[in-house]
Structure formats: C-alpha cells, structure tokens
Image (cartoon, rainbow, N blue to C red; front, side, top):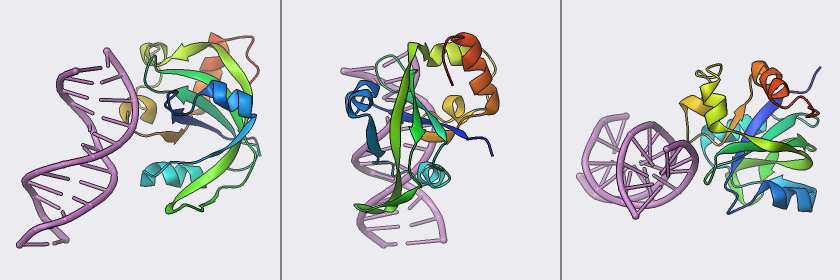
Length: 138
DNA sequence: GCCAACGTTGGC
DNA sequence: GCCAACGTTGGC
C-alpha cells in the first residue's frame, strides 16, 4: 500500500526544520491534544510528513519520513510519538496564505481548525504541492 | 502584542 | 456531569 501523508506543525523557536535537518532523525514528541495524538497513532513506518512552521511566517518548510511505528510516549501516558527522519526542504516554503488562497483546501483541518497540530494530508494536497514546486521530490 | 478559538481544570 | 475560569496555540 502506498505511504500516507500527514502534516505536523512545529514552532521553529522550539524545534525547527533546520534542527531536524541537523539531527537527521528525531522522536516527534510533545503532542498532547487528544485528536492530534490519535493521528500520531495512525502513522506507520514509510509514511511521509509535511513539516510546517507555525509562528513567524506560517508555511510548509520540509518533508520528513516516518521511520518507526507509533509508540507510547514514555514521559506521558496520554501521548504518543513516532520517529521522523528528515528528507528534504520545501524551498522556498509554501505559505499558509498560498494554501488558503488556492481555494482548494477550505475543508482541511489546516485551514478550518487552526490549533490542531497534527493531521492527515489530503491526496489533493500532495498533487497541488507538486504543481507548486515541480522540482520537489515527494 | 493582541485576540479568537478551543482545550483543560476544578468547584460545585 | 456541568460550566466558568483559565491557559495555550497560532494567525495576524
């Protein structure tokens, strides 16, 4: 089965895509919202994740790959984590404004539910991103 | 820095 | 179990 795509937000002041690039791999923790945690639990090794910076200029800035199964967060029984490996930058980033202005994603949680930090990405989003950044390998 | 949205906490 | 108060997130 083809890999699934997700989107995960991070505040670059706390943990940026550049840091993930330097680390190569990290455990994606700190997700506590129950809805977001349930999304984490659906992630499987091989799935891909759009890394999104909130705060500053909100934008999709990179792609990462899920490299572990979802597992309990050892430091928080209500949470769950996965390991992510950095793949590549989205350069230049695709901003929230561009995504909204496309008019294609009005029903997506990224637009509709601003505070949700982790969500599935609709198939149409991958297609649209490829159209925005033709050289970007998905 | 402000504010809207909304999740969480705690008193009852 | 309800709901008011409070805290947090994230866009602007």
